Each structure stands twice: as C-alpha cells, then as structure tokens.
Length: 129
Image (cartoon, rainbow, N blue to C red; front, top):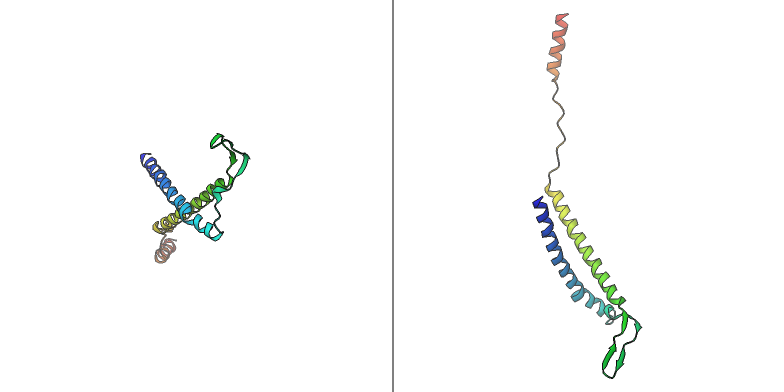
C-alpha cells in the first residue's frame, strides 16, 4: 500500500509541474502566435460589462461589474491543451510498457504417450489375449 501512495504522490507533484509547463507553453508561445495570426487578438480582454464603474474624478467609487468570458475561453483552451498533452504522454508510456512486457506463452499441451509407446501397448494387449 505504501508504494502505491508514494507513486500517486509523485504523480501528483509531476502532474502539477507538467501543468505549469503546458500553461506557460500556451500563454507564452501558442497564444502570442495566435494573436499574431489573427492581427493582435487577445482573448483575455474580451468581456461583457454588466455595470460601468462609478467614478468621482479620478477615484473609483464602485468598480465595473464584468463577465470575463474571454479569460474563461483562455482557461478552457489551456485545459484542452494540457489534457491533450497528458493523454499523449500516458499513451506513450502505455506503449512502452506493452513493449517491455513479454507475452505469456501458451500452456504446453499435456505430454501424452508417443506413437511407439502406444504401438507397444497395443502389441502387449494382443499378446495377452
């Protein structure tokens, strides 16, 4: 039981670190490329303003109330890339495990008497009659 718990703990720690790596890949490499292709499009800035901010001069009395659906879209995109990456890693590990495990051999047929032994037995039975 202790080995399984330790394996799971190591998996959680590595999974967390792997998630950070893939999140950085998405945020720092993939999304800027998508932004460059789409002409500077940034999903995280997309929002729906429910209530405008109330201002008195330069100070904010009530902040704006917004639904940040662009940020949600960005997080969903991150999740899909992380899920796909983890799927591919696990699929690769499983293929490596299949190659390592030898195929179990079919059980050998029970050894029966040879043809000579059967003929000798028949001969002895015929002699005794």
